[in-house]
Image 1 (cartoon, each protein chain N blue to C red):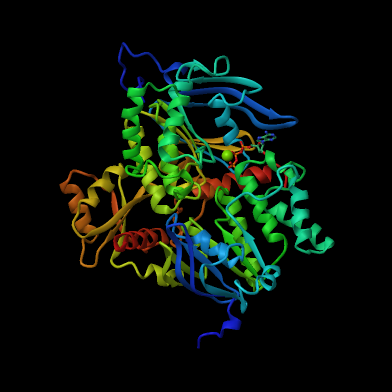
Image 2 (cartoon, chains in turn red, orange):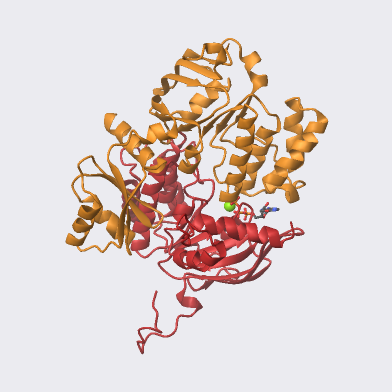
Length: 277
Length: 315
Ligand SMILES: Nc1ncnc2c1ncn2[C@@H]1O[C@H](COP(=O)(O)OP(=O)(O)OP(=O)(O)O)[C@@H](O)[C@H]1O
Ligand SMILES: [Mg+2]
């Protein structure tokens, strides 16, 4: 966020890897013969909403699992909030939150019990739990439903509870893997308002989505294809870079502005053609 | 003239289903013509899956009935099952079988002849971008690949009626386009499709849609008819800070609702509410710079938000 090139302040040095929330170099993951993630590099600034896009099976979840220290890479480096995650995955555990593709909630526990469970996972002291629990219930709109069984909540509520569980320990960085998949349009909008509130509080967000209008709301995007990053930039940059590429004209012959969805379709189609089909 | 019962693919009457204290489906009447693509929309928890499960004969109604091609789901489900294909929201493939083994297995139990199985499996795997992973065990697929495998498996036998419960959840944009191409082919072959979806661009592709809320279906019609239920005019506001612009327009009187869509704000102005110029003036007055305000067609996204809000107010 600090662009020292434009506003030279003598006491602020050039941003280095330790200033970023996430800094990844040469990250690679193989499953047997198959390379799921193939030497990717990227940086995510603190406080940024970073959108991670790509077709099914392109390696998004695998990357996220490496970043959260859930699985180990074959090679490459990962710095999260200045810590080396490959060497010591435990170090950042308390400072990050992870909402996985299948909301990891216990269906047979109540709302309250799920929050308690996650507070336990993150060793939250009792007084902090009381405070955070109140905040999370309020945020998720679940006040008065603490004793309800999670299985009985509809998808939209489960999703907000899962967000609450992932943020119960006030993480500085939050990983969200398709948090809005299968959620209705109104609930998705509310959810993005919550994400913006978190970003406003300085939380860095790393999020995957297959909804291209959500992607447009991110600060910066990376496109994965077959384990590689094939495009990167702000939504506007990406659209402008690929405008000529797309070259669609409207009825009056003007170049049509490409949407992120147009770009997605073009990029993937181009990669597939280049792969020789 | 209304088609007679036997001509309808689905004819549900006063269909009800309760779970404990919750009336999940509460007296639903639904008629679906053969050869159409019928979209089922509604907020989470509206009862869409429960309705679909009853139509698929995997859940018995508490009261009411539904006729599928004239046969009752309560009394004649054996006659119905061979004619329908049902895709649930849960992953129901064998995790230890490969992609192609799963397809082969499910097509065989549905009685698809061997030659047809090979041809269809090859073409579906190709269009779903799964061909190069046909030997991979299902447990090692990504979330969206699993979803596409289920979709392919449902499409292997070409039943007269397909009941699809959010088939494209987690599926990438290109594969969704491919899926809708397949749906168009099935429709051309006069199959009937009922599909629940949270994607409003998919709803636009349906021939008819039903909006479901709290166990009821208050509205059905073509996409154009459903969108015409929304009173007022929709405007698109472009602004350097769309979130600030959103907050600003919400405070204007005569604005029914507003939401962010990508990087523009979509504003629904009530009949007699502000026009484009008045919206600009209002935003200027509260110190928000907007670069452009243009009238736009009401889209399904706006219609959904409007109908959901209305239903919520009525409850
Ligand atoms: N444990 C595993 N063993 C073998 N292959 C795996 C394993 N886990 C993932 N893969 C493969 O790695 C590739 C990337 O999967 P990943 O889950 O990262 O994709 P994704 O981009 O998250 O896709 P989606 O959009 O469908 O969620 C896929 O081809 C997947 O089948
Ligand atoms: Mg994934």
